[in-house]
Structure formats: C-alpha cells, structure tokens
Image (cartoon, rainbow, N blue to C red; front, side, top):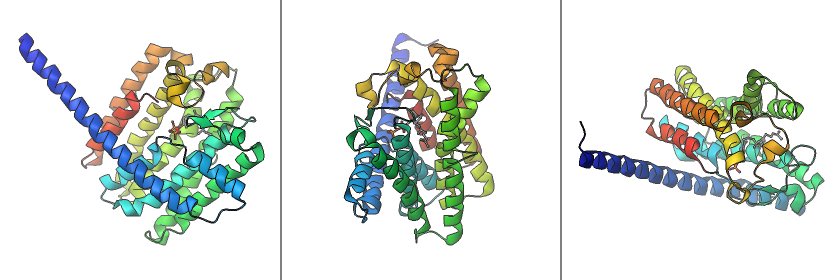
Length: 316
Ligand code: GRG
C-alpha cells in the first residue's frame, strides 16, 4: 500500500513527465511552424503571383497563423522513418497550401459563410468573394506544382505523392466529397455511419495523407505504410471529435474562428450525436487506439504518440 508521501512523489513525477512531454511537443511544433513558414515564404511570398490583389489575398490567409498540424505530421512521420527534414519540406508546405485553400473556400457565403478565421477576417471579407475563390484555386495549383518541381525527390516519389494527395483532396475518397456530404446533411438527422463517413472524408483524408506522405518520402515499406495509415486514421477521427467538442466548449477568441457555429448551422457532430461526456470518452478511446497502432510500426514512435496526446488535449 502507498504511503501518502509516496503518492505525492508519484503524482509529482507524473506531473513532471507531462510537463516534459508538453515542452518537447511545444518545441517540436514551434520548430516545425518556423521551417514550414520559411518554405511557404520561399514558395509563395517570393513567387511572382499576379495580379497583386490575388497574391495579397493568398498571403492574408496562408500567413495568418494556424497550427500547421498537417505539415508537422508530415515531418514527424517522415523523420520517424529516417527522412531528412529538407526532403520533407516541400511536401509538407504543399499540404498546408491545400488545407488553407479548403479553409478559404469553406468560409465562403456559399458554404459556411464565416467572418473570422485564424483570428482575423476571412479572405472574402477582407478582399471579396471572387478573389477568395481564386486565391483558393491558386493555392491548390501551387501545391501540386511544388511537389512536381521538388528536385530532392525521385520522379517516382513525386508522382506517387501527387496521386495520393490529389485523391485525398478530391472525390470520391477525399475532402471535397466530405464537404459536399456535410453541406447536404445540414439540418437532417443522419446515422452515426454517415457522420463517420463525412468526417473520415472531410477531415480524415488530409490527415491520413499527411502521415502517408511523410512515410512515402522516407521510402517506408508497404507494410510500414499500412501501420502508419492505421495510426493516422485514428488521429483524423480524434482531430474531428476534438474539433466538434471545441466548437461547443471554447470561445471565439481562443479558437480564432466563430465558436458555436456547428449548433447554429445544425451540423452533424459528435456532441450532437453522443453528448459532451460520451464524445470525450470516445476521444480517449480513439487516442488509446492510435497509440496502440503505433506498436506495429517497429520504430521509436514516442513523438507520434505525443502528437495524438496533443490532439486529445488541445485547446484550439
Ligand atoms: C471547401 C473543399 C472544401 C473543404 C472544406 C477544411 C474543411 C473542408 C472544412 C473546415 C471546417 C471544419 C471546422 C472542419 C473540421 C476540421 C478542420 C479541418 C478544422 C480546421 O483545421 P485546423 O484546426 O485549422 O488545423 P488551422 O487554422 O489551425 O490550420
């Protein structure tokens, strides 16, 4: 039986461990953001994009902050499989460009009609709708151009990346298909299977391909890619559940986007389906599953498990 003093030491050590992990992750994400922003600067800021208004609109949304979670995942998985960061950066930046294009389009009046994103006015509010549509279009094109012209990668790897990322961004297996299904489901009672399908496509596909892209650049085996995919599928689900929870539990100031939007738009979400407590329990189960899936990778995967922990406990 534990003495009270021993319990205090255990609690203290656990707290120290949590702080150590949080510190390590914060440093990792801060470093990733910096290198990704530099690469994005090289690819977008210094690139000759005309007309100027379009260039300004792209930069407005792309350099507005953002967690840079997907590109960080590319780096984390790639480095876990031994790739050098330099080789991963264009792919990581390309995925962030596609993500930002999707946010710009998602905010348009024809879709979610939002005024605030990444703590500032949405692209169409700051500029205009036409410019916002075109800014998204350019970002998507620039992303594939960045990979196609990546001289640090073999032609075979570039083609595979372009193929996998375009499938994840598009339809029928990706984000655009998920967005369409999500908009069609507004205000309707849908089954849990349909809710999962929507989120798997809308949010999960780009998170899954971020992890796979890191492994592809690192030339991981098909078996290793399979194990990474299992982990990343759980991570995508975890990201969506916590996103739905934050929408109802956090403030607009902290999120940098309008809180409570899911409820007002009668969106199909995990809290709407299961309630808050059950959604939180589900998130914890998915987190454990994600970390268990890492055991099959056969590499040092502490960082990847800590990333799942970060998603589980994120505040924005
Ligand atoms: C318009 C083609 C198209 C797709 C839209 C991204 C998306 C699909 C919709 C955004 C709405 C939403 C809240 C989706 C759920 C999860 C998600 C993608 C959140 C935003 O990603 P974060 O939290 O954002 O990583 P930051 O700003 O940190 O990059």
